[in-house]
Length: 150
Image (cartoon, rainbow, N blue to C red; front, top):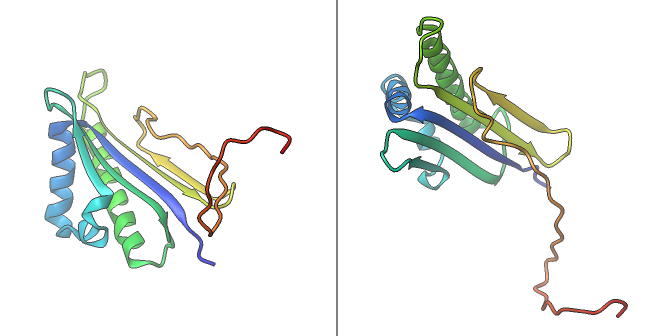
């Protein structure tokens, strides 16, 4: 049986800062993480004025092992962006108003104790964990409303 995880990553802030971070990564790494994961896993969203941007990665039911090439490429991406955001924050003088740049990462494993959460020092905690209970059966079944007891 394969072990699977759900993964979510968001980078958000002013469009200028988000594009700057992604461009810096592209210049140094030739888009390795983009090649490792299909375009269907990536999305970007803007506010109405397009001055605030969210860059998001989302994958469900994926094998997430540290020795997998795709996971290594993604971890390298996470580390680069974390360093970039930290340096951007560090370069701003204390007490200065600045447009923020934040990132958050969550991996939800199959087991209750196998969760991973990491984020930039300044973040809005936009990603949160929830667990649900569901039942699946391999045979397609017809559903009917039933009174209890049957």
